[in-house]
Amino acid sequence: MMTNQRDILLAAADLGATSGRVMAGRLTEGRLTLDEVRRFPTSTLTKNEHLHWDVESLRNHIVAGFRQIAGAGELASVGVDTWGVDYGRLTRSGELIEEPFNYRDQRTAHVPAAFFAEHSAAGLYAEAGLQVMDFNTIFQYIASAEDPRWADVDSCLFLPDLFEYWLSGERHAELTIASTSGLLNVTRRDWSATTLAHLRERYHLDLASHLPAIVEPGTVVGVVRPSVLDSDAEVSVVAVGSHDTASAVAAIPASGRFGYISSGTWSLVGLELDHPILTEESRLADFTNELGVDGTVRYLRNVMGLWCLTESQRHWSATGRPTDLTTLLADAAALPALRAVVDMENPRLLPPGDMPARLAQLAAQSDQPAPTTPAEITRCVLDSLALDYRRVIRRAQRLAGVSIDAIHVVGGGCRNRLLNQLTADATGLPVVAGPAEATAMGNLLVQAQAIGALPQGMAALRQVSRESCELTTFLPGGLGLSEEDWRRAERRLWPTDV
Image (cartoon, rainbow, N blue to C red):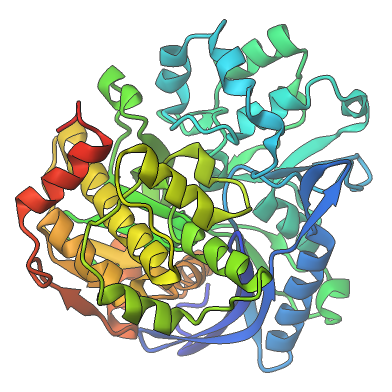
């Protein structure tokens, strides 16, 4: 145990769907300071017309970052978090069968419809409590069911577990990342025997023999192999809240009842609960029950997030019209609000490509003026996100039977002042923005707790978070938009819901 140490050095690899970074964290007298030591793109590969993650490149970046931190002091522990659902298949000797598929690959596009044609959607929701999305792990596995290479597979590891295997040599399945798969029983917090039996009988997928034991977040799963850090120092490998949103929510500097938006490439919008909501109404509203740190449940919906804006910027740059985000946001703020809005959960917005054209087409299809300029596209994205946040937060409270006092926005999107103010106006609730590095902070705080440097419990994590970051509060009404303005916008997209 290390509770009497006053200064502890930790390292976190935090991988988002567009970029990753390695962060050093130093815990000193109840405050955590963060230092970014390495940033890198989460690169993809195209093989046989399918999208894969370049995990070898990612592993090299993680190891290089950890080595740099270890060279700066006595490193106590490391942890890895990533986006959800994706996985690698390993042989007994530890070789990858193939580079892990990128969840944006289209091989699963028709799998959910076929699956639910013969399997009860209500039955799966009662087990997994999961929002149905084409790329859920269960559908990825079904898409590969006829691959003859299953005969060579020893184990299947979610991405953070895969990186931690490379660090430590230990194979495990961390709970929060496993809860994005559709393969859990979320009430028992373990693999679903019912779901695994169905996959074995219907698709001849014997996943029960390939999925490792589940560990709770905050478990020390091993030590870093000497060859990784080129050192004999004993550095713990901690299974943190390995799903990035689980780590982000763990670091929210809140108390009492709150809603949250983990804002980045995706927006994860929801509530923190102590039990899953598995009602039929919840299933039909497509809410997910992902598991969190310290026995919690993240009751939420996935919203497309700032992906639509970053992909628009990528398209403009590729076509010779590079754009600066600061200028885009300033120009967008000068435009009228809610002129054109789109449903940010439309699956047409998921793949890479000409995002501005898709946004314009969706607006025109609902008889709205199509945004054309970069500023108009930006305003459309931000207004639409705020509208979707309003809808999701209000539904979540009703379905869970709780009321909240504020919304906490964490992640890179918390720096977007226009979006934060729009969110406060749309929801009628104060919006507290920060910390931007919530995911890395949650990762590091769970490590500190696992090695005994912090007391147990979520309250201890959040106390350190409050002491370690600056927060900005946005109050409703700042843009002069009325409740009826938001209702009118909702009626354009969801006339039967309002």
